[in-house]
Structure formats: C-alpha cells, structure tokens
Length: 235
Image (cartoon, rainbow, N blue to C red; front, side, top):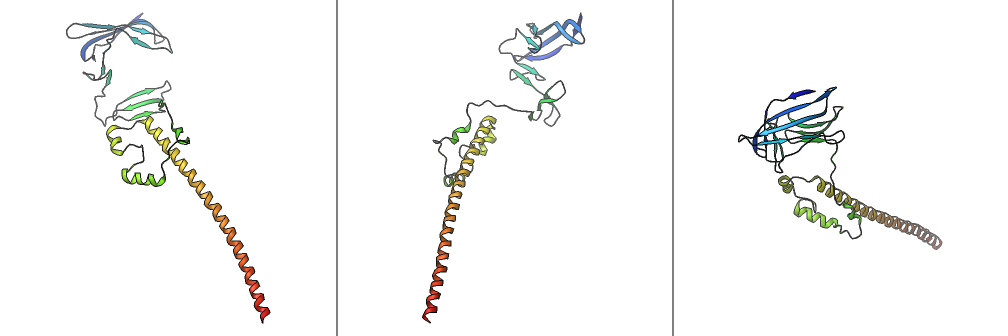
C-alpha cells in the first residue's frame, strides 16, 4: 500500500474560493492505480466543508466520478470566478501557444482547441432532422432564373441564404449552413438539367432546320438545271 499526498490547491467551485487537499491511498502495481481510495476535501474561508468521494470503474467505463457535488457547481481551471459549469482560462495572451488537446495513446491528436479559439478536429458530425431532398420533389417551387437574377440584384445574396451582416454578427451554424449549401447545389442541378433539355431541344430544332435547308438547296439546284435546259432549247 502506497499513499500519495498532493499539494494544496485553490480552486473555484460554485463561485466560492475553496482550499482543497487531495490524497490518494491505494495499492500500486506496475505504476497503475488499482482500486484505490481517492478523497477530495474542499473547505471555504468560513470553515464549510465539501467533500466528494470518487467512484472508480474499470475500462471502458468511467475512469472516475465525483459525487456529493451541488447541482449548481461551477468548476474553474485557472479562473477564480467561473461563469459556466466548466470555465477554463489559459491565462495567456491570445497570441500565446496554449490549447486544450485530446490525444490518443499513439500520440495522435484527436481534437485541439487553441487559445485563439481555433478548433482542429478529424471529423465533425452534426445531427440534422432533415436534408434538402425536397428540392427534387415535384411540388418544390424552383424560382426562375430571371426572378433569381432580380432577387440577387435587390438583396445581394441568394434566397434563404443569410446576409453577410447576419453571419458576422451572429455566427455560422454548421448544420444549417451545410443543409442550405446542399439545397443550393440541388437547385443548381435542376437549373442545369433544365438548360440541358433546352439545349437538346434547340439542337433537335437546328438539325431539323438544316435538313429542310438542305432539301431546299437541292430543289433550287434542280430548278436551276431545268431553267438552264429550257433556255438552251429556246435557242
């Protein structure tokens, strides 16, 4: 049995400054924590005590769960007065190299949030309740290109698409944005299909006119030959 006592830390929970002592007492085998007792005791300046006894669970369950926490508790990391349930402050300038990172066992970065607010991730999956397949339904009211041109001239953006000022002030919703983008792609596909049909019809009409013109040219040649023969006989 080995006992590890950590130095006292000052943390902020539920907007109260608490002096906490951490102690770990458990059997240690191969540098792994095995079924140990882990006690957190926090005391504010008035002597009020909050303690939480974590419960350990085997992989792949929860690593540790701390009970006996108030429902309105706020935890701050490097911030004395947290404004959210979990409030993390790097304590550095915006240009400093500080971040929050999730890393796999093979040291591959899974997720990274920089101090400047830039999020790096391998994949972001957004749950949506609908997708713009409705554009291909017969009842969908596709605006004409002439009306679309007039709308753009007046509004400066596509229909249903937020204006630049709205995005700058309110931000961009990834799910709604991708849904709207797909809607416009599908509308563009319908425009291309319609134009392709028009071009095919124009091509067919042109080919028919060329056939008529060729027949008229052949008839003109025949008539010219007849006229020449008649003129020769009159001489």
